[in-house]
Image (cartoon, rainbow, N blue to C red; front, side):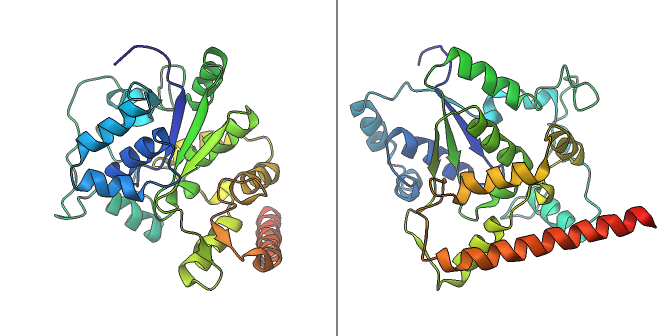
Length: 279
């Protein structure tokens, strides 16, 4: 390998399967539009074949910035899964994420003595610097780009850190490339596709999740206007030149209905907030 600044920053959800994250990075390096085939090669242990493909393209030494490796997790979250959520649905998701999907046993936490720095010490905390890191890299790496490694369930777009990184990259004019599991387009008569499309079309950062509520609060505090942020997020994901604009085929007729439903939700939420403030 070689030392130097990474040319690509990877945005990914920690809920994703690790082999799929690796496959997304390799697929991006190979210029593929999806990573399903690379997953198959990894599962079947065709490592030499993948290495040869990377060497042929002369990109085997390309470096990627992945937070799981580049951020010292021992200085922040290695000893805990975060505060258990009060909401039953959120608790179920939180509990699922801390357990082995096969044995159902909780993952062991780390017992290292490394000092932890979280939201209470923002200057020393490593996990709250994504915007500073992106700003720094965009200055020292002229051709910096962002890889959006989307999981099969599109959970990435419901994670607060991930959507914040998407908007930050867009605002900084950092080129973005998306890798999805399969490049086969969704069809409007597919029930699963309809569900995913509706979820993405009504997406708001207010509903996004973070492992720690303090992290979400810190992210929201940085956003000067939620409606404008949400609109930009929608444009990044489903806009004319959005990351997923070619994934959904025949969904144009649904767009007006989804947008109307979203406006209704926003009005209802606004009325609820006003009623709460007057009580």
